[in-house]
Image (tube, rainbow, N blue to C red):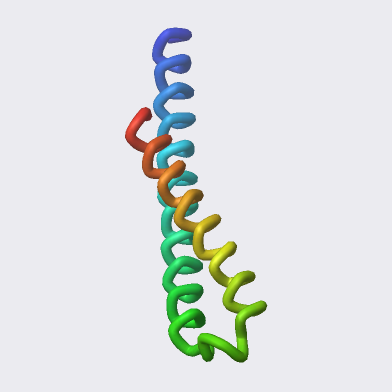
Length: 75
């Protein structure tokens, strides 16, 4: 009985980790898409400072997505 409960706990914890990775991937993809859209709307010269900020967010979200995919692959 204890072994069954232990197995259930490990399966549940793994399922929670997988779900959290998928949510993190979905959030990163959505933020990545929004940042890409915002970059396309900006003027190349007039909005240089905004472009730098959005580019930083764009790269950070891409990195977050890559890390979540890698973590999901390791599970």
